[in-house]
Image (cartoon, rainbow over the protein chains, first blue to last red):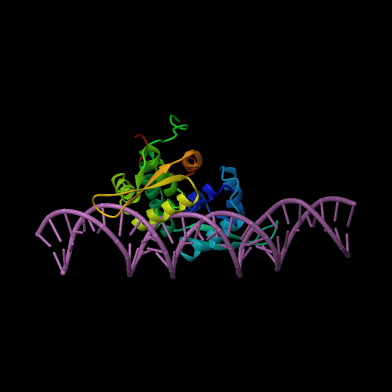
Length: 114
Length: 114
DNA sequence: TTCAGTACTAAGTGTTGCTAAATAGTGGTA
DNA sequence: TACCACTATTTAGCAACACTTAGTACTGAA
C-alpha cells in the first residue's frame, strides 16, 4: 500500500474496526471483507487479525467461537461497554484532528462542498 | 499526550509541518510554536526536530543556517518542489481517509454543521 | 553566577501496520 | 484419490513514527 496511507491508518484503524463492531458483532474475515467494501481496499488481513488480538487483550470486546459451515470456526467479536467508550474517545480525538487540519494553510480543498 | 492523538499524528504530522512550510520558510523552534498556536498544544519539541531531520534527509526541503540575536543559529527550512509534491500527495491521501471515515457507521457527528 | 528563554541534537522506547508463512476446515473437480 | 479454491486464524519479524529524556549552546536579565 502507499506508505502515506499506511502511516495514516496508525491510530485510526482501531477506531474504524471498533465502529464496524458497533453496528453488529463480526469475525475477522468478515471485517476484512467489509473494510474492502468500504474503500479500505488494501488493508492486509494479517493487520486486522493482529488488531483484533489487541482489542481483545485490552478487553474492548467479548469473544465467542462459532462453528462455520464453510471452514474453520469463527471468532466472533462483540463490542462491550469499554469498547463503546473507547470508540467515543476515538471520534472525539478524530474530530479534533480534522478540525485542526482543516484550519491549516495551503489546504487542497478538492472535496469541499459535499 | 493522549495516546490516541499520538497514534493519529503518525502519518499526518509530516503533512502538517509541510503545510506550514508551504506558507513560508521557518525553523524548528518557530514551527513548534506555530503548532501550539494552531491547537497542537502538546507535541513534543523533540518530535518536531526529528521530523525535520527526516524531511531534510528525504530532500523535501532546503536548509539554510541563519544567525539569531537570541540564541544559537537557526536552521531555516524551505519547501522545495519535491516537498510540494509530497504535500499534494498528503492532502490527497488525507482527503481519501476523511471521506472513508465519514461513511463509517455510528459516526459521532458532534461537529457537523460548522 | 544563576536562571529563563531560545535553538538544536541524539539515543532509546513503545505502538502500530505490513509481509510472509503456516495451519486448518469445507466442497468441488479432474 | 489428489488437488485446488475459498474460508478462517495465528504468529514471527520488520520498518516507520511519535515520545521521553538528556545534553549542548547562545543571549540577556535578575
